[in-house]
Length: 452
Image (cartoon, rainbow, N blue to C red; front, top):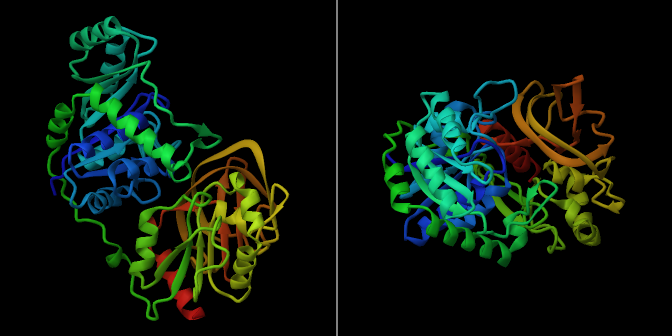
């Protein structure tokens, strides 16, 4: 395949790569191009803005959770039919899984995709030094093709001139654009980063439009497209959910929590459930008072229930419906926000009461990749199954594990257990990208079919 593609990276977090990447997606889409949006790493929030900008699902490329071998096939799957793909990086260009070298870094993914890299540089506190910075990033790994720079937070015409002169003299990397410091785009944040696009509605659309106009006026889009077209052919067969799982007879209906409180979900997870024979039926716990009819399974992923705790608690009919489904023995899979929803209470407000645990907000951020093993049989995995996942939350459950924990892994203080397996319920803080372990989806569908 030969899809034009670029990776948008930065020396560190906070340089503005989300604004630039999302703006590029919107600006190129406004030109009539079909843009495929991608995000390096496990992040759920940025892909929501990418999806608004490009009009198709934002997809993650995570070499830790899905393995390096699956990155190019997943990219090919997501980019099918696109005129150009824009891949937003994570953290700094060379920052990956802690203690694992380049694994899962933006540089690693760029090499796996054979894609040129554009570096977004926060130029607000430098002039000639920018050339040394860019030269260092360009020369650090010869296998990474650093092919362009976009200057961000530039103060004035004079500042831009100094930056361009230094880069022309000292780096050999062309400047593709310059974004002024005064050009603000409203992208409100809170305790886990940007507010998800699904929660902001018209505001999110306006922010994406503003990013597109800003980047369209500040960046040489023709030069960006020329760079994207210079990417060599990528020799990879597109990932296919149908080739990863066996179809389970019976076509069970599986409810999938969605909406503002439960917006964290990888597109491939639902695709795998469908490929395994399920009918996936979305519902919104903030508004729907009953589960969809005739469902024989439930998936409640991540999100921000702590921001909607009053509304979720007030929807007593749905909470009772969830509890009844679990009590009847239907398979229920919950991650992070889903775990909080299934507990007795969250910050003192009543939740579904499926699990004997209570959750509360804390100041402490729990963040990082995990290598976990299933400690017993469950509706997701047999005992001994090894997975790679990710934690990202500021809440704590008390207790943090049930009589049969969901997972075990080695933490900083030694071995630890986490999560709950209770009958047909599997609930944990651990986020999983099922493309990295497709057997989980098939096992869940089989459990739902057996319940039916």
